[in-house]
Length: 365
Ligand code: XIL
Image (cartoon, rainbow, N blue to C red):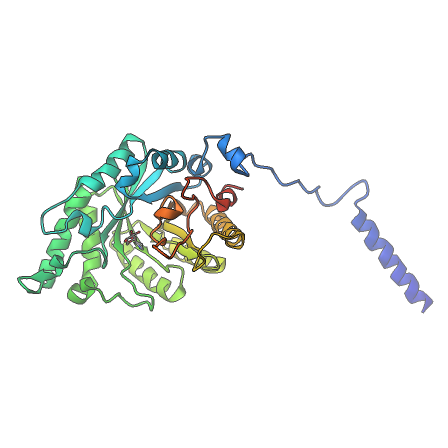
């Protein structure tokens, strides 16, 4: 018993000595966390003119973009916010088929031109959105004298639309969302008019036409819920096929996310899976839906702070794969999620053009 007691005592002395450090510590001293000098509150924000583009684009992470309407460019407050924070623009609606070619052969360029001209004048990049989608697409494409158009006619129309749009902005729009949302949530091809008339061929024809119209533009496949495994595997198969034909350069994950999800592990698996195919990644339509709450309470704010904080941490971890992050709107009141009677607060800036709490989490690294 006495022996056991001394054994225990000597173990105790050994452990406490090796823990104490002494004169010659084995572990290096722990460095205090590096304090960054980025704004932590409104006062510090107002004391600098730096913005997201300085912390992310200028510092070698990725582009920071925003989806806008041309009307935004008439409002000095919005223009100031865009210039301070963004280095990339997307047309939220102005480049969709129903905006650009509402009737066959009659192109309506003014809204899209306005955004591109502003970008060129202010040295901002432009992501084009989107050439082939099942929404905001006019019926005439799929009709021929009152009956359903043939596959040949639909593909002809698709090709000439893409040739016109991509051709017009050749050299000014560096990347296009060529096909948007072609896979449904179950992982099959979405049963759109495109698919029911043309089968999957329309996807390849669209990419082909875009490649021909501007061989230097980066071509993206773009989708929502692109982190969900079932959908992801199908998208990966489609990308592999497009890659084998040298028709695609990037995967656009829309990023319409919410306060609780997707889980980081899902996001990471998706980034790994797509990047392993050899395409670049872009987050193309980021917003964080605040759900049914009618007010931006402090509880919602703190959840959104932590959601934005962890998503951007993840994006930074993948800075070699991610080349751009675009917000789907500039301020909460301009968001597509903010409907009359159903407010939502999904973005980083409020209706007064001020940064919200989550802004400070996004830049705190
Ligand atoms: C949305 C716009 O934000 C709305 O203004 C419009 O009424 C409908 O489309 N996925 C996309 C985007 O690829 O084009 C959609 O934009 C949002 C979902």
